[in-house]
Image 1 (cartoon, rainbow, N blue to C red):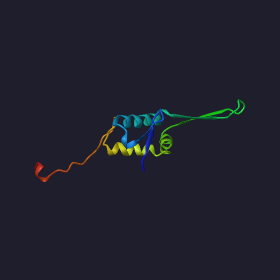
Image 2 (cartoon, one colour; image 1 turned 30 degrees about the horizontal axis):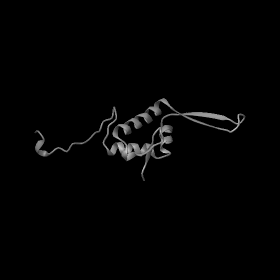
Image 3 (cartoon, rainbow, N blue to C red; image 1 turned 45 degrees about the vertical axis):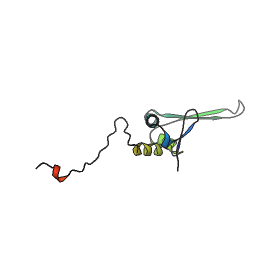
Image 4 (spheres, rainbow, N blue to C red; image 1 turned 90 degrees about the vertical axis):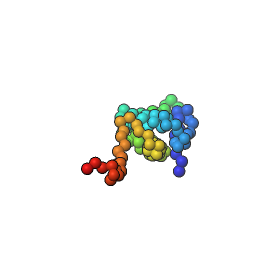
Length: 105
């Protein structure tokens, strides 16, 4: 399945075709929303007597769930790992295979 990111201007870009900088910025933006909150607003009505407006603030896992409705957050993280991109503060731990001949006795 191919996942897309929709830009603020409405352009759909396959996640696999995002530039590294764009991918990093999207993930950082979602992480920022997890901490600071994401405001979701909705409204409706056709007549002045029927107009309504509601807003909700999402935090943490609820933000991830919101973006995952379209499958995008998990796909973004998977693409980041595939490209071996580290975000600020991340570390990759790798076990290095040591040859017996390089061991000091």
